[in-house]
Image 1 (tube, rainbow, N blue to C red):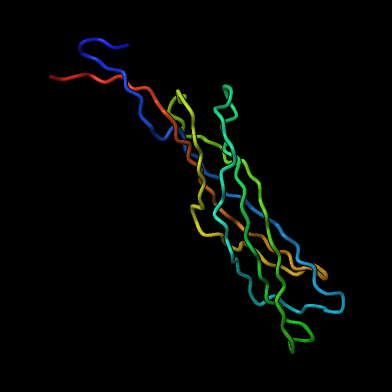
Image 2: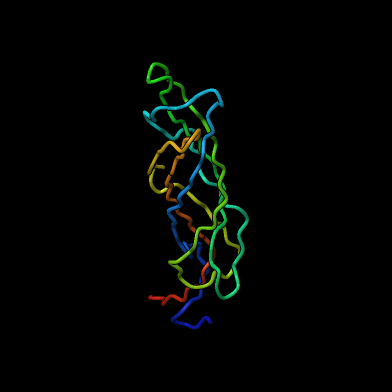
Length: 157
Protein backbone atom coordinates (compact mmCIF):
# COMPACT_ATOMS: atom_id res chain seq x y z
CA UNK A 1 0.00 0.00 0.00
CA UNK A 2 2.38 2.66 -1.18
CA UNK A 3 1.27 6.06 -2.42
CA UNK A 4 2.99 9.38 -2.89
CA UNK A 5 2.34 10.37 0.74
CA UNK A 6 2.58 6.97 2.46
CA UNK A 7 5.09 4.14 2.57
CA UNK A 8 4.82 0.66 3.96
CA UNK A 9 7.83 -0.51 5.96
CA UNK A 10 8.66 -3.70 7.83
CA UNK A 11 10.30 -3.29 11.25
CA UNK A 12 11.42 -5.69 13.94
CA UNK A 13 9.45 -4.97 17.10
CA UNK A 14 8.10 -6.50 20.27
CA UNK A 15 4.87 -8.25 19.33
CA UNK A 16 3.92 -9.53 22.77
CA UNK A 17 4.87 -9.82 26.42
CA UNK A 18 3.72 -11.86 29.36
CA UNK A 19 4.77 -13.14 32.75
CA UNK A 20 3.76 -15.81 35.21
CA UNK A 21 4.49 -16.50 38.87
CA UNK A 22 5.05 -20.22 39.27
CA UNK A 23 4.91 -22.12 42.54
CA UNK A 24 7.01 -25.26 42.91
CA UNK A 25 6.56 -27.71 45.76
CA UNK A 26 9.49 -30.03 46.33
CA UNK A 27 9.76 -32.74 48.98
CA UNK A 28 13.31 -33.52 50.10
CA UNK A 29 13.58 -36.97 51.63
CA UNK A 30 15.98 -37.23 54.58
CA UNK A 31 18.11 -40.30 55.34
CA UNK A 32 16.09 -43.06 57.03
CA UNK A 33 18.20 -42.98 60.21
CA UNK A 34 17.72 -39.19 60.66
CA UNK A 35 14.72 -37.66 62.42
CA UNK A 36 14.84 -33.91 61.85
CA UNK A 37 13.92 -31.60 64.75
CA UNK A 38 13.69 -28.34 62.84
CA UNK A 39 14.49 -26.56 59.60
CA UNK A 40 16.94 -23.73 60.19
CA UNK A 41 17.02 -22.21 56.74
CA UNK A 42 16.52 -22.71 53.05
CA UNK A 43 18.04 -21.10 49.98
CA UNK A 44 17.95 -21.28 46.19
CA UNK A 45 21.17 -21.50 44.16
CA UNK A 46 22.36 -22.21 40.61
CA UNK A 47 19.38 -20.51 39.01
CA UNK A 48 19.55 -21.21 35.29
CA UNK A 49 18.13 -18.46 33.10
CA UNK A 50 15.01 -19.87 31.45
CA UNK A 51 15.32 -20.77 27.79
CA UNK A 52 12.45 -20.08 25.43
CA UNK A 53 11.73 -23.17 23.38
CA UNK A 54 10.79 -23.13 19.70
CA UNK A 55 7.79 -20.86 19.19
CA UNK A 56 5.56 -20.16 16.23
CA UNK A 57 2.67 -17.79 15.66
CA UNK A 58 -0.35 -19.65 17.06
CA UNK A 59 -3.87 -19.88 15.76
CA UNK A 60 -6.43 -17.34 17.02
CA UNK A 61 -5.84 -18.07 20.71
CA UNK A 62 -3.35 -19.93 22.89
CA UNK A 63 -0.59 -17.34 22.82
CA UNK A 64 2.17 -18.61 25.10
CA UNK A 65 5.91 -19.20 25.12
CA UNK A 66 7.14 -22.59 26.36
CA UNK A 67 10.21 -22.23 28.60
CA UNK A 68 12.48 -24.53 30.55
CA UNK A 69 15.02 -23.93 33.28
CA UNK A 70 16.29 -25.20 36.59
CA UNK A 71 17.47 -24.27 40.07
CA UNK A 72 18.74 -26.02 43.23
CA UNK A 73 17.23 -25.99 46.70
CA UNK A 74 19.25 -26.34 49.92
CA UNK A 75 17.54 -26.85 53.29
CA UNK A 76 19.58 -26.71 56.48
CA UNK A 77 18.04 -28.82 59.25
CA UNK A 78 18.82 -29.88 62.80
CA UNK A 79 18.50 -33.40 64.21
CA UNK A 80 19.58 -35.48 67.25
CA UNK A 81 17.80 -33.03 69.59
CA UNK A 82 19.53 -30.06 68.00
CA UNK A 83 23.06 -31.43 68.48
CA UNK A 84 23.73 -32.07 64.79
CA UNK A 85 22.95 -30.32 61.52
CA UNK A 86 22.97 -31.27 57.87
CA UNK A 87 21.89 -29.89 54.50
CA UNK A 88 19.41 -31.54 52.17
CA UNK A 89 19.63 -30.60 48.49
CA UNK A 90 17.33 -31.07 45.53
CA UNK A 91 17.21 -29.91 41.94
CA UNK A 92 14.10 -28.49 40.29
CA UNK A 93 13.77 -28.67 36.51
CA UNK A 94 10.75 -26.86 35.12
CA UNK A 95 8.89 -26.69 31.82
CA UNK A 96 6.23 -23.99 31.80
CA UNK A 97 4.04 -22.12 29.34
CA UNK A 98 4.21 -18.36 29.84
CA UNK A 99 1.00 -16.71 28.56
CA UNK A 100 1.45 -13.74 26.23
CA UNK A 101 -1.26 -11.37 27.39
CA UNK A 102 0.01 -8.04 26.03
CA UNK A 103 -0.15 -8.43 22.26
CA UNK A 104 0.16 -5.88 19.50
CA UNK A 105 -1.10 -7.44 16.31
CA UNK A 106 0.07 -10.46 14.40
CA UNK A 107 3.68 -10.58 13.20
CA UNK A 108 4.13 -10.72 9.41
CA UNK A 109 7.31 -12.78 9.38
CA UNK A 110 9.40 -15.08 11.53
CA UNK A 111 9.33 -14.52 15.27
CA UNK A 112 11.71 -15.21 18.11
CA UNK A 113 10.89 -15.59 21.76
CA UNK A 114 13.01 -15.00 24.83
CA UNK A 115 12.46 -15.51 28.54
CA UNK A 116 14.03 -14.18 31.70
CA UNK A 117 13.50 -14.23 35.44
CA UNK A 118 11.68 -11.07 36.50
CA UNK A 119 12.18 -11.39 40.25
CA UNK A 120 14.74 -13.51 42.08
CA UNK A 121 13.28 -16.88 43.10
CA UNK A 122 11.98 -16.88 46.67
CA UNK A 123 11.29 -19.50 49.31
CA UNK A 124 7.63 -19.10 50.29
CA UNK A 125 7.45 -21.87 52.91
CA UNK A 126 9.55 -24.63 54.47
CA UNK A 127 8.05 -27.28 56.77
CA UNK A 128 8.87 -30.69 58.16
CA UNK A 129 6.47 -33.43 57.13
CA UNK A 130 7.49 -36.73 58.65
CA UNK A 131 10.91 -37.65 57.27
CA UNK A 132 10.69 -35.06 54.49
CA UNK A 133 11.27 -31.35 54.18
CA UNK A 134 8.58 -29.63 52.12
CA UNK A 135 9.83 -26.54 50.28
CA UNK A 136 7.56 -24.13 48.40
CA UNK A 137 9.49 -21.91 45.97
CA UNK A 138 8.16 -19.05 43.84
CA UNK A 139 9.70 -17.84 40.59
CA UNK A 140 8.40 -15.13 38.24
CA UNK A 141 9.26 -15.64 34.57
CA UNK A 142 8.70 -13.07 31.82
CA UNK A 143 8.59 -13.83 28.10
CA UNK A 144 8.87 -11.54 25.08
CA UNK A 145 8.01 -12.26 21.46
CA UNK A 146 9.83 -10.25 18.77
CA UNK A 147 8.93 -10.30 15.10
CA UNK A 148 8.46 -8.26 11.97
CA UNK A 149 5.52 -5.87 11.84
CA UNK A 150 4.13 -3.91 8.92
CA UNK A 151 3.82 -0.14 9.40
CA UNK A 152 2.37 2.51 7.16
CA UNK A 153 4.08 5.85 7.59
CA UNK A 154 3.44 9.27 6.12
CA UNK A 155 6.26 10.67 4.01
CA UNK A 156 6.90 14.35 4.65
CA UNK A 157 9.00 16.22 2.11
